[in-house]
View 1: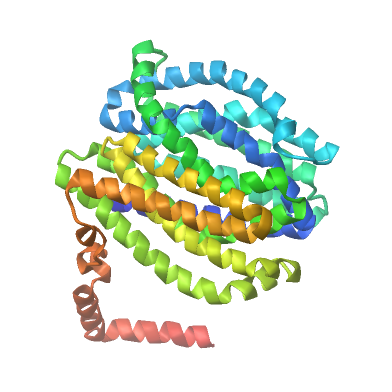
View 2 (view 1 turned 120 degrees about the vertical axis):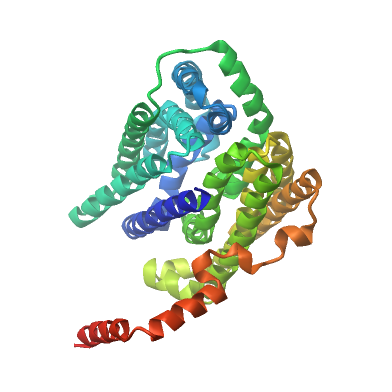
Length: 453
């Protein structure tokens, strides 16, 4: 089940990344570095406000839905009530704070930022319903609602690009439409797959809040760790600098696909495991595979980074090559930390994962304050490497201590981690069988000949 879920989430993330690459390219071409930075300023804060308002409940929903599926009806009803009450309060607070958070911007940017704040309650409810679906391991629907967001955005961007109307305002309204559509799909998925009834229960809200509050500092700081560099840049840097850095971040995220895919599937799988050793094995194997795949991806991207930037975005973006390389290394540390943190949450230790993320946040704040004024976006990338490395090491320390395993046992590569079809012995058998079947060789030869012709 875990392998199937990882493959499904990974395939979804690959498609999402492809859509993200297209939208990133089109917005960079149409808006330039400054316009791309302004778009980042507009969309940055609603996601942060939404995450702050949910108080760790999405993670708690994943855990309790996997642990006790009978709670689905109460959790869903509580999610709707909670979103209406807390979401509106957070929306009012964000309206007051947003002018002070985005720095000195044009009237158009401030106006669009305020309009985009309306997505806060929508994002909250989407996160909670997605938590239900992931806890129930309905990853097909989770993938569908995530794809809706990115594919709709990509399709509209393409149309606007060819019409010559891809402006900052058009991009913002497109993102709002994608958020609304994604929420509708998530509600449809919960109704179709889980069939919840309307049974709000205060006792179940308290139970989920207890889990969520323990993990809440970690959830909040994890997001801050992941994007604290951009958050601080949005407040102090020019739109052009923000736009250049945003492109580097988007490109570096390529190496984080596998980690997010594995992490989304690992947490509910570990929570549902009945044997302690089996749950620990899922986490350690996922970590080893993630690190190995990241290193294979990182090496070619390191050497081709300047050529890809020049070809895809234009000569004006090549200056962020060194920043991009640093962010790619940082993404390896972040991905490894994300896997271990997902495992700790699934094992029932959200407080320990929170410690790792808070430690990283403290390191990043100090490094950003020290390096951002003097080194600019290069200093922001250095701070990211420092913070993500601390997050991984602290999370790994707690995993090793609580599960009584050694670092060597946890990190040592082994052939048994590979899928059966990729193991050397299996490959030799497959090659041997292939060579003993002349009809297969003939068919392959015919196909190759047809391709040449």
